[in-house]
Length: 251
Image (tube, rainbow, N blue to C red; front, side, top):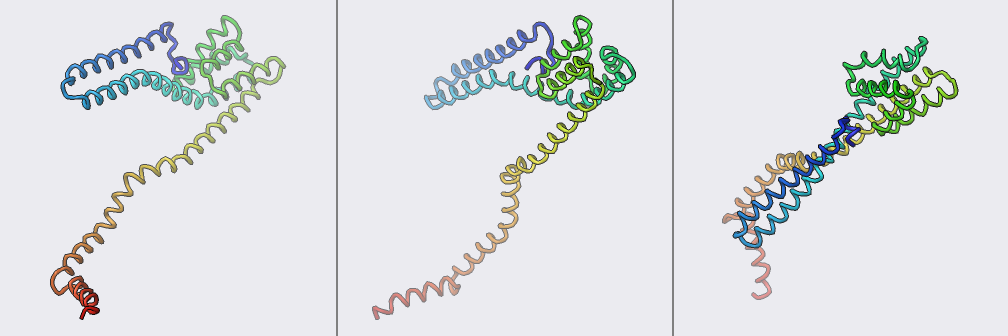
């Protein structure tokens, strides 16, 4: 999760754990302070403080991990959005006769402005390629991103190099495949949006609409009830007739 979020420092894991433990300790201190201040308020208040303390400690423990996971997901999506453009540019360089190493060196500076996260990852791939091989750098790139599309891309490049096939055509085809996946994902999210909007409409807009539509009828009904309950009104006459009908057998 830290790697997906872009935290590559040697002590990133220790810093994350320290920040999470600090939040938990702060929640514990606040709980004991509230318990000491409110201990004379009775068992009901103490039970509320206990529940709030357990909830706060749990949130303090879970929230940092959820934040890292959310950051990693957003960063991976930004990388995937820029990857097809980078693959097309690499294909042009490969078709021009350049190896993949030099193609990466030419493409990385040109995508740094629109896609900085992807450019940073390609810089890491270049440094690892100088120490070993391009395949090794791409494999580690796929391990850091941990996305199915990136793993499949690395497999395509490695198989094309091993078989001596045209790497440029494989990159172009896979760039189009990634674009199709991104388009399908956007359409799926758009289709789900109508379902997600159902609950806000139901709980926020529907009561106000019902209030506006039914208020005149309710006011009119109340005025009718008050008016007809007066002497000589419909309810007064109906009550008199009912009494007459009930008293008729006794007469």
